[in-house]
Image (tube, rainbow, N blue to C red; front, side, top):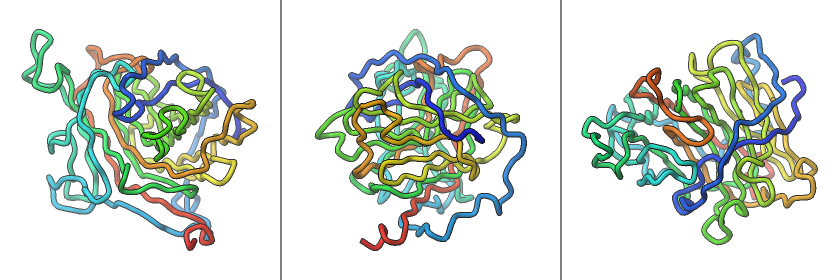
Length: 303
């Protein structure tokens, strides 16, 4: 999603919400300044400062096969590329999104067996997956937003944990703002990206940073987080800050991160930036989410 902590590169637009499917940006792989992390923080190193108060969470408790909590999430339905020329069709079927009975959400990207000669039952898409959002159910301005996630792997695999301005329906993208807390593409198995998009810095011009591990990201669960305050957003992997953005980072463009944003989890297959599955890509692939939690500072949470 560093010892240097602050740097800026270009990055791709990560699948804006369903209403923006007409967006056809052509992202490119971002150049980057990289830090290689040589050790994994201990649990003590990732403990939160006492200033943070939990205000919302989903621990995905339930029986095996249960649907995602509909009081918290809506799982969108559709294909057509999602603005990035992706190949999956998103569904709310248990085959694509459900609880596993061990307090994990499973988003499952799979190849459809009934696909042949360019046709299948799911929007003429060879692959199905899921994309779940808290729009109209939960949104927040400022705070620490984090999730413990195990990402899938493979060429053309593109999981993300991100946020979009709740005013999207009124002002559109990118004016609503977008905060990508975690993006991972399977062809770069050791790298996590964190990015913001807004007016004048969207699509391939998003303001981004990354962190590179010695081990593959998909080997284990990791905690991906941002700490978002007025005029500053910081990105963390397992408690280590690796990127931050302020209004000065935007070089005169408008800062649009001062209103409510909602949360998204999705697992894309293919797209301009990650590329597409090939003979090395194994299906199914699963995005496993242990929890999503939102904290605010006490004075903010009590308002």
